[in-house]
View (cartoon, rainbow, N blue to C red):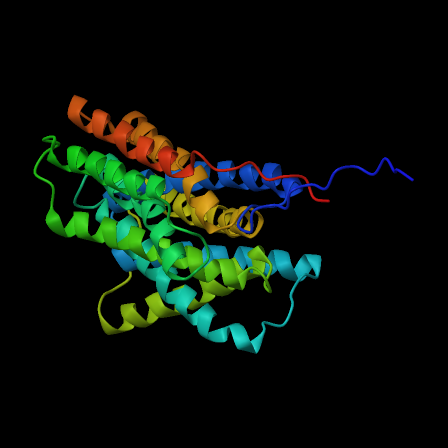
Length: 310
């Protein structure tokens, strides 16, 4: 006797998100890019307005912590943190502080477009890190994408956009490296902790760490102009919303897909720097920016689309 049973469907690749998670995940990515992309320009406004380096960091972490914990309390979404995850939470605090301090502070000494494109090499680092940790396989295509992306960065840095401060470049690159590592850490944390509560927890830890640094070295330097206050408060809001949506997108899409799909962020950073600060990339830097984004796109291309769930 014959049956009309449907043919078996091929299983989803192990690193592919479920189809019903793709669209919400991409939505979170767009919001992340919009808010994070505005961060460097807002930081420059804060610094130009007289804000101190650690003052800006404490402000962005404090505003995020207070706002998010208040939201969690009102909505009744506070849950106990798994004790087994505390070491990873501590690692996330250190990485988040390093990424924030490195990237935001770098714009004091180098133009925002250069800082953004240097920082944004982190999507190219996520693939190799995921390969080393056994999460995703590093293919030849991704290796080529790494070479293309960093070649573009060389054009950006070597195209004559002023005399770039090597300390500023190192801070931007170091901040990006912290983000690349944090993608792998947050991928494990968001399995057990909701993105909003994870952001709130990390913000508290990072704020306390910056406060400790301030007591050891430095003083509070509040903004002296209206533009400075706009920069501080806007930067804090960009951090709170951006990081929450970033964790949500990693939870839905995975670390590598999120890192690649978020390549809208440097475009937003460069565009805002041009409009608000008047910082314009030269022809060679523009070519380098296109090459960097091309390398990131190449890393994402050639993937099999996720098959429907059986």
